[in-house]
Image 1 (tube, protein in one colour):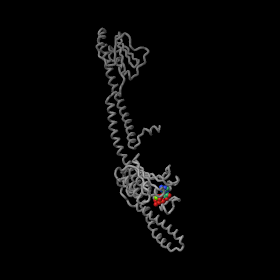
Image 2 (cartoon, protein in one colour):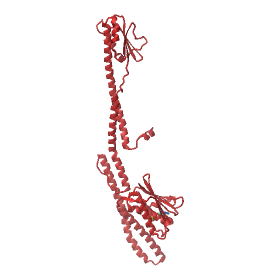
Image 3 (cartoon, protein in one colour):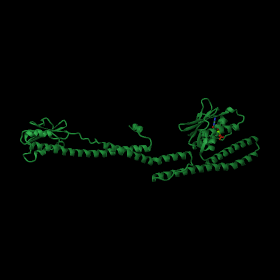
Length: 448
Ligand SMILES: Nc1ncnc2c1ncn2[C@@H]1O[C@H](COP(=O)(O)OP(=O)(O)OP(=O)(O)O)[C@@H](O)[C@H]1O
Ligand SMILES: [Mg+2]
């Protein structure tokens, strides 16, 4: 039952509210119109009672005041309303097997009037009975010669039989539906605004604040959201600043240590010490660069991702003049425009390409045009790949795999975390996979 309900329920808050309100409104309208219709039935019945009882009485009076030989003619000439039939007979039409007529039905003819009045008009006897939805009333004339018989087919009461009823219902529902749809969409807009703002904040801590106007609750929520965004901004800023400060302050002692190491007697120990210090210096420099980049608020602009890929590959090729041309390959559209921060995106892609070249001897960049709201950028190489269990670990800052910890490749372990940071800030991500044919595949995604 709940599953069925969920399947047919619209998914947006506005549509759901509108549906509930409309159903409630239709129920209320139906109830209101039913009350009105029942009232109409009462009126209809009262009018019918008045009409038939008056006719029956007129009929009776004309039978009483006319001489017996004129009665049949008079009866034939009488105009009777629909459903009412009358006849003169020596016997009553009311049969002994008939059911007694219930009082509300009997009221239509009011046979008791025939028993009242002056004695020369008064019926000698009145009988009433019901058969197949028809009321039979028989009254014996005062002279006792004949029975005046009346047969009334009870007309069905039709409370809904009115075009205006349906039209009114439809018009009212349509008008209310328009109002409801308009009002619910307007009322639920702040919710989608909030979702959009939260999304924007996830992509960029420096996203513009939400407007703090509108109804009280909405304004309060917007203010709370803005305060939260401000706190996150401050938190991120403080941490970056701290990172930069540590990096900066470490540089002087490292330089001093390097100078001191120069005076070491032992040749081998000195070389090791200097190499360690150089590694430390590289790490500190990378940290500083990372912090600096994070602090620089580069504006988001439309950029050509295909051109960016080609530039990164060209620059990588320039840096490795001895590498054969087929080491660098680009596959994808000529142009693909996205919104993003060009320098940051270039840095992310350059890190992936550098890894492919350093550890995989080749870099093939494949740009997949938008599909399902996503752009894919794949960087493939022909190296040893990374064991499955380390696919996430290498995204940790300063995390390098033991095997590649040699001077030659010379990284500090910030390339992948920086690339992921940048792509996530654009609303995308980057993950690693081993290619079945060997080598590593880095898949970067960006919202289209
Ligand atoms: N294409 C690849 N093939 C094999 N191993 C890789 C590949 N890319 C990265 N790795 C492994 O992941 C580790 C982390 O990479 P990351 O780019 O973060 O740092 P790095 O390349 O060592 O240093 P940096 O990029 O900061 O100069 C690398 O040290 C390497 O061991
Ligand atoms: Mg790297």
